[in-house]
Image (cartoon, rainbow, N blue to C red):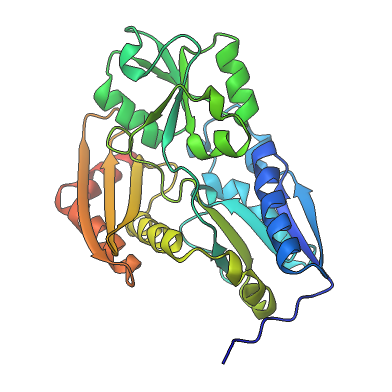
Length: 314
């Protein structure tokens, strides 16, 4: 017997940050929902978050990526919006009470991208070259592999970061490939950095759709947008990060892939200077992604991850 499709409401409101990439993501989900439920009016409520307003300091110093989602959750809470669309790498590992990730969309390219006007790849950069990144995860891996490069903070939306590169403030910058491709800027990618060279951030390239936990109607409507393989990967990555208290204050990466019906998860924890690094890789059951995430976290702990994290907290 076929499952009864949920009754679509007359209107749905999507809360979104107002950056070009966030709006692209919200518009993409809006268009998918309009196609699924043509009788429903779907609109976007654009919002400026604290994370968008404070650009002069790195995220790790002002409370982390949760600054990009708090205002959107307030709009869900008070009924101004029915759902919020996020880059999953911006969503804190512990969801606040009363909220749920109702659907996880299919992943775009999860890799980091090398962007430069004058150099082909990281290995081609001369000593002392300035590389821009906002991520401690990327910074630690860069410092471990290329200690002769100068790593400088880089904040702002994608267009702002590219402008700073074009103005000559950096020899190269590292960005998420997914954001560049979604914005039609894939031609700016000089080289994709393999996951062996730079392990991606937890959730990188995937979209998370959040709503209130008591909105069973919205959760049901969103299920056609849910991508089970991506969800399994992301849940494993998030469990790994949660177990190690991961945030953008911690140089931590986690990346899962579905291979032959199994889930392969790689993770690392490092000191920001890249001099201490623990890494692990395990394969597990796709039906139990969070178990695998916790197992990789335990493997990293056995190599000294806790000592690295404790030193960061001082």
